[in-house]
Image (cartoon, rainbow, N blue to C red; front, side, top):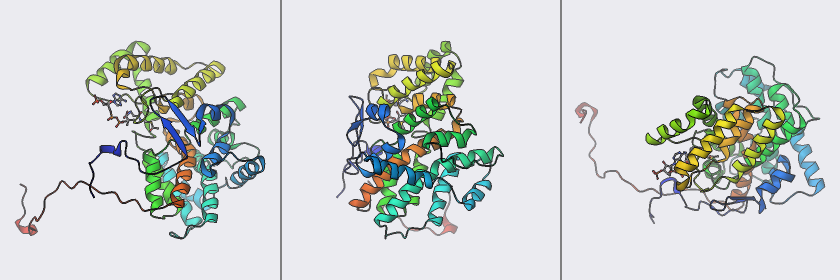
Length: 381
Ligand code: ACO
């Protein structure tokens, strides 16, 4: 059976899922039915990840047990640290992270094709726990520093910021970062989650599944956009230059980074929460001139391309927040991965429960019955 070709599979359902829900016209995002703003207000990243992966809000004992398990698996093997030490210091952190996640599969092997419940649980805990440590370890080592050992007295977010910067963060900073992780934890079948589903459907081991997803996240049209937003804001430099810059790009049919979304045709609800976090952060810890430029970019874009349903997405304000937290731009996508691993794992669990290998079809546009030409007779046409 061949159907109509839909570029980018826009609007084509790839799975049935009850993990998250997006209404792109109303600007709604729910995790397991709970609106994202309620979770951002009241939950923690680990509780939200439990909700996504295990399909219910944990009771107190479950939550304490899960938090303790993740905490106890934060450390990484010295051989993985040694492997990171041998990476080039100029290497892209997202590539380093992909290598590290894939390497976990050698240290904690799961026989492909025989994935059992205990494997899914153990690998879920390890992936949730170790990604932050691997990102921070690569960052410290490329600076020429010894990596910092995770601190058991710090929560998930505070510990990551500590390992990354060497400083214990202000609790308000840690909370803002925690909310950023929650906002990025899951978003239906986006490109990286689709990669996880496809790789998971072959019954590949979980570390390979998450490696695939991380590779897909790394592209500038997906997880890499917030890095590009910051580069754009720096390039613009002043509020006066915003309009000519936007008009120039649009006239050359170039995209404005952080604007537009395949699903949202209004302002992304995560961008609204992130903007509020940015304002809170700048109020408490000093203003950012780049924030004023971003607000003007949003205003000009709304005026010029808002009618096409193009508004800020999650990446528009996240870079500004990360910048203020002292996170370097090339770590924005790895930070995204530290959060999104929860969603990838949730979809992987769901895929395994009702698995069928992905094998779409194509619309063939090539020739038929072409005669083979020996190399000695070939020439440029
Ligand atoms: N700036 C200007 N115009 C845009 C933008 C933008 N950022 N995004 C889309 N458009 C325009 C296109 O030029 C096109 O216009 P046309 O119909 O006049 O030709 C129309 O809107 C539709 O664009 P598509 O590229 O077909 O939209 P698609 O749904 O395929 O792309 C995407 C969505 C990739 C997010 C796109 O909006 C984009 O590239 N945005 C910038 C990159 C970005 O911010 N990515 C992060 C997304 S969020 C995330 O991944 C976590």
